[in-house]
Amino acid sequence: MEEQSDQARFAEVFLPHLVDVFRLARWLSGARTDAEDIVQEAAMRAFKAIRGFTGGNARAWVLTIVRNTSYSWLAKNRPQALVLTGDLDEQAQRQMQESAESGEVHTPETALIAKAEAESVKNAVAGLPTPFREVLVLREIHDLDYRAIAEVVQIPIGTVMSRLARARRMVFAALQESTA
Image 1: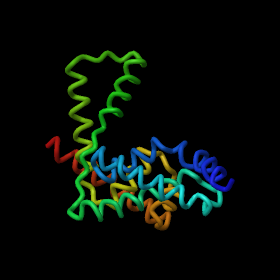
Image 2: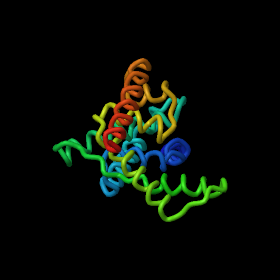
Image 3: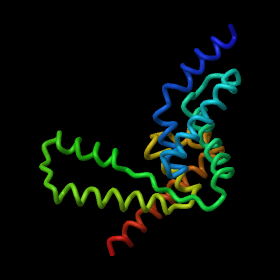
């Protein structure tokens, strides 16, 4: 009977955030196949720990597990330096679709420019040191607020704000360098 309630609670707490779980694992690992392994391990950890979830922000709880699982999995399976290679094609496609729906005309040239810009942003984010990259991804990709980011990364809110500001400045500087 307890296992059924654990399964129901897991389905209620973890499964609604599965897309965010995969995105974070992909950003942190840099590879789809690694992210799949990380998500699988994170799901097992979350299931084992589901009784310890006391309520509150389920998304932050789940993403904390994914973050910790990512780093332990990467340390075990890829002890060398991490390189982010995930692409932003889905986001670029979504942006193109939104602008098409708003009446903007896209030509092959504007699509190529948009793809090149997305690639530049991806490379700029990938070049960030891990503490800055994870805060930026949690804020801009996962749309977490400062408090939730602080909870996930286990740092003070002030540190979240300063890292986010520095990460944005570093991305902007990298983009300026790439266009110069």
